[in-house]
Length: 178
Ligand code: 5GP
Ligand code: MG
Image (cartoon, rainbow, N blue to C red; front, top):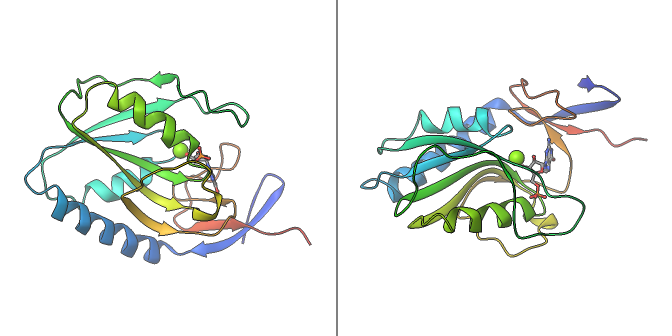
């Protein structure tokens, strides 16, 4: 068990289980992108560890870019997200793979997707470490998902609670308050 600020977390997915799932996802990407040269857009901050483990198992040519988008405010979808860190290469006519840590309501990805399509990408797919299918509120096509989890708040392996906990090798789930 670990404590971060006011909350206690217990282990939920071990680093070995994560490694197996990331390897399986890499195998799928290797099959689908063998003869392509996609741009991987890693969404900061949360996806940095997932991306580091994933790309070291990819066998096709690819470029890596990092991007950061402002999170949505409240529950309203504006259809537009602000780029806090933008792309430094042209993605026109390129195959793009968005590398994201977790899809929860799906609102963030559903806003990032059209932003990239508007830049003229040939294809845009989402590769995500974790998904909470029970919380999805918008239609979103996530082609590559390493693991599905229930509607719980998790930390570790790049994911934070209030800025902390990204360093943990395993994924932890918040302990329900008794
Ligand atoms: P969405 O727009 O899909 O609701 O939210 C996606 C973002 O919310 C993720 O990129 C992540 O930053 C954050 N998020 C959603 N669920 C969790 C969670 O269980 N733990 C952590 N640490 N962040 C989460
Ligand atoms: Mg994120």
